[in-house]
Image (cartoon, rainbow, N blue to C red):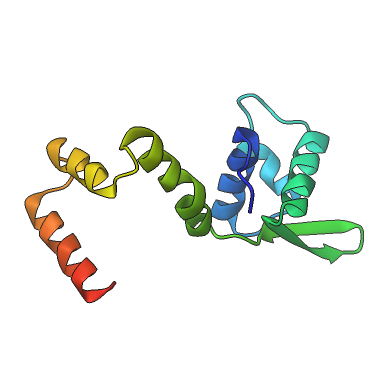
Length: 120
C-alpha cells in the first residue's frame, strides 16, 4: 500500500463516506475547485491500480468501492506521520499533548488505560 496524493486522499474520503459509487455520483462532492468527470475517472483508475479501489461492472458502467478501509489507511499513513513528525515518534507524547490541551479528560485517560490493559 503506497501513500496517496492529496487529491487521491480527497477522492478516497468521498468513497469511504459513500461506500460505493459511480463516478457521476461522486462529482457533486468536488466543487471547490470542481473536478472534470475525466479527471475524477482517471484518479479513481489510479487508485484502483494502487489497490485502494475495486469495481463492479454493469455493461459499460463501473461502480467503485474501497478495497482498503479508512482505518487501515489512517493506521498506516496518517497517524504514523503525525506521531513521527510532530511527537518525536512517541505515542506517549501524543497522548500527553491531548491531555495538556484538555482534549482528553482524566476519566477518559483512565478509560484508555483500562482498554489497553484489556487488550481492546
